[in-house]
Image (cartoon, rainbow, N blue to C red; front, side, top):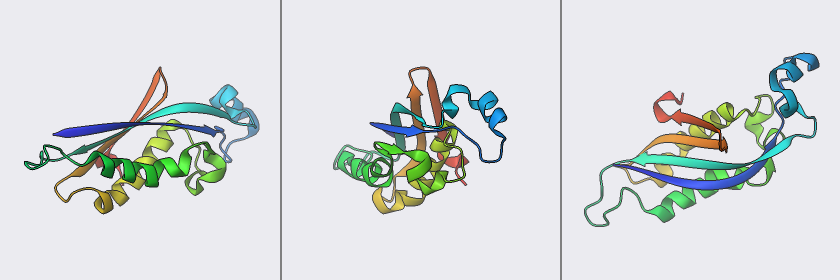
Length: 142
């Protein structure tokens, strides 16, 4: 059984690679290379899987998932500038592809502290806009 919880957060970023010349950054990232950054109201979905507990009827307690995502992800990104306030993006361009990958790595690393032993982290999805969805499967996390 899969269980997906959805969370909303707001954050800003600037798409800019320190390894590219300024002109190439503008070609690659366009207006998203604005030196002052720009923000999004993101939707984050986290999927876990496991058997349904016969006593509770749940894959995992929802408050436990809220605690996990709240502490490991939301507290670090809500109303933050990803470039400046997340060490993972000091040199890594915070494209939503990279954000999904970083979140996936964080969640894969911390899942055992929060999830029941029979439950596994499966996937992270991030909606940057209503037109863009980025997804990271747990088996892709390295």
